[in-house]
Length: 65
Image (cartoon, rainbow, N blue to C red; front, side):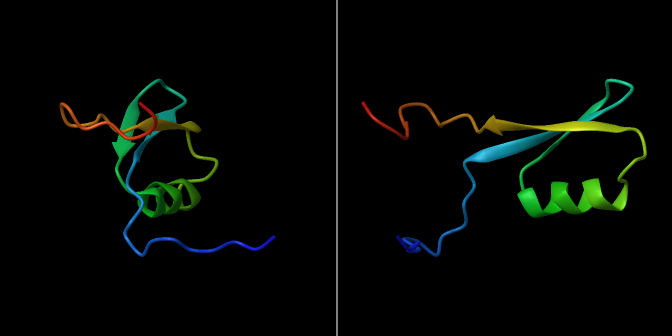
């Protein structure tokens, strides 16, 4: 099996919540930005990252109906 790219559009169906050890949080819309933030501050008061579904505009759902 091989992977085939089906779209050149940016993938933006998620947000990323960065959790600090002290409980503070920051939300990022771009995976590359949160990844860079994580690696620049690795080992400095960071706990984990949660992947969040972006809220859909009213009446616009993605997925199966």
